Image (cartoon, rainbow over all chains, first blue to last red):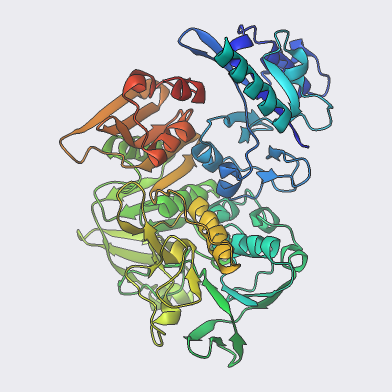
Length: 164
Length: 421
């Protein structure tokens, strides 16, 4: 069963550890300070929704609108891992922003890389057993596991709250 | 089952992928009049002209795309006729290709305006890689270019030519640039940006005649041409690029039509079926229903072509699905580092339309949203495109946004705000 990053916003207190860990995980040295200084963007964002912190990141959709929209062929969904990414896919992102326009979750941003403006999004932390954001979350707001397991937990919680 | 697809660009290639996924056995044949063995992205041709990417960079599929999907390819050959009764496609080399299900993904063709001299040397269209190659070669020899048309292709071509180091003039017949995708203010921002760069922009005036090089000039190998504008002004240009819009490529059906209804494009239903059995159409050539207006329209943009190709293929393979909500008019572009996204209706057209906007000229940021009855009708984001995808999904789903109205223009609006309302 494919694993996904699950978000339980009720447990998030907005510490932003995930964003720092994400930036650091995407530079070779893995150093958070260097990531901060070089302006390496975070691919997960924490929004303030009526004062409540809510982390949001890519859902790696089954039928990704961003992949349909990409006219450079850079944005691809890997059939095995299920990850949707636009880096190291054999085609270069050219910064046309079609994916930004298409993504209904608004999780694709712009960044400068090697003198060009390109799209940046969650790549599912390729090569890591657990994504950096999940690893760094001290509150259990981000978890990593099979989707059906998470759905079952949610159902149990919902059922319990009905009883109580 | 024999599937035949005419066209190998966005809609055609996405149909190939879907067909092969659903049907491992049947034969798939792709017919294209172009010689390119690898699907390439027409939208990137301007970057190619500018010399910023090479031919490899135009490809949006792997080099072994057709092999990998076990597709029989018939390239450099034109489909000239469809025999609906015999279920055959006739080719320009007199061969016939039988089909069980046929997909027309012929795309669009460059509209050539009826101007005298339009067929002379140094006048180009920009639709195919071959044309782009010719333009790229030609730019080496010239000093001045004129782009006829200030739409998306026209503006992108103008910037591309400008980046190669030649002088560029854009002539647009409408009163402003990008009259379809932008409102007046956004057009003005774009125009002033172009003019700051040294690109001359002439609007509200057409081209009357392209005057070929005189005998003596030709004798001495000068490429110069004259261009007579409708207001009497005369410009000089060494090359001219026609970017006066496109038309659905329905030429194949003009002489012999088995009974496929055509309005502007080929009429299709939600399953991408044409009005003739077993013939489907997708992409630029198809005319489908726009979610926002509820009316039939062409939707000549990349993402819609890809999705339509998938839907058509799925229906052809016996797994019928319906085309989801699509908005014909949406575009993303970037002109000299000012990213712009426009979706749907970008101007108030009815009395009840409400406009939200922020305009900060010093930062070159302009964000505008059009609402009607508490639902988003359109957006135009320039300079700062954050949130465009999210607001775009609100347009497609026509969700009521009354309670989050004050947040809509905010660049930090997120899916959580929408889900929370």
